[in-house]
Length: 442
Figure 1 (cartoon, helix red, strand yellow):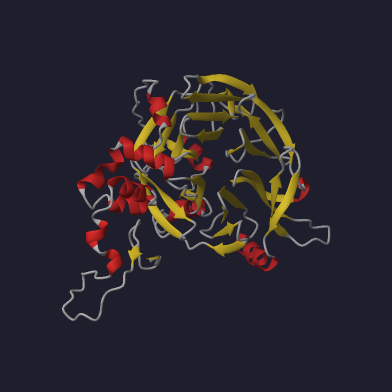
Figure 2 (cartoon, helix red, strand yellow):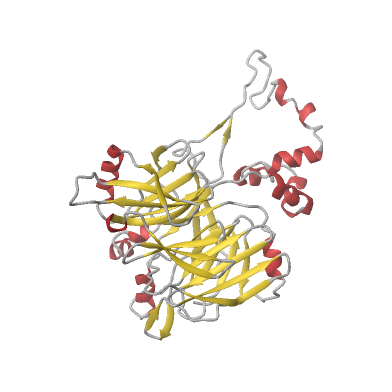
């Protein structure tokens, strides 16, 4: 049986397994397992292919602990036959990856000479398992300074350069500690929105908005795309498109659903959709757009959901937090869930009008209150809401002066849907570009 004790587990990737011990024999030692179903004479004769299949089903924390058992298990991470089996049978893990918040204002202030520079240590992320309600810590020590996480897909985390100009992009698999660099974008940009989708045989990246029309001015004018697939077709930022007029991409986030990237458009609220194959942008009207607050787009079970607070101050309608599902026609929204009113009252008191951010993955949606470490987890299938315990690894490592100067934002987390994977075959395609990794000193 697997148990989780958040207050008693100081290290990540730690589980406790309980087995029944024989108490009738007084001569049995405490470390001897005498139950018949754990008889090593039986388990030691398992065929290797069956044993590999069992190991392929383990979640990453358990798999990396199992590698310490013997040399053969340790070498599985480098075995082509095992990784091929892993890609075929391993179940998907709909987890989340969070990072400490880094505001754009703090970057601009630093670049203008008023800050202390980027003296941060190696970056780390915080992996959240919504099934076991468990937190784990991941190191991104190999990612150079001057890069910020922007998106995630297929086990890879996309990091984008902070410096204004053509954007450098790095794809990192934190489970393996691997880095893959893409060619820089062609157009100079400040803080564009980034969309990433990765599968076993292809990768698509969309970089949109914040075109630098001068060293002191930006406009949301264009988007450029990177594509590469196993069929030999590739486009290295060679495909561009024009954004809809008067669009505002403040969130910087994109969600990929059914061949399209979606992102929120502000003032007024609407949804921008980019058809990757047709390379066409369109605008979708948001539901109740005049009464929305803190809208977010999330992907859940292959559907696009919009999550937002609804406030009708002049109408006799209670304030609430609602979820809408975009229908197959691509223009109609249907409300699918609403936060219980008593819970919303508690949520609104903690939120205090500061806003919130959402991220979805599989059956789960995480709602994070800005400026705090409070977050709610929604299980859509079970229609169950619960408060997430604060991440034990993100507490107390930020300077008090920086936290106060940013109203506590540097202490909060922002995150992405993340599926940990031991193998990402698409990086082999990117290696064919023969692009040498460039050192960065930012």
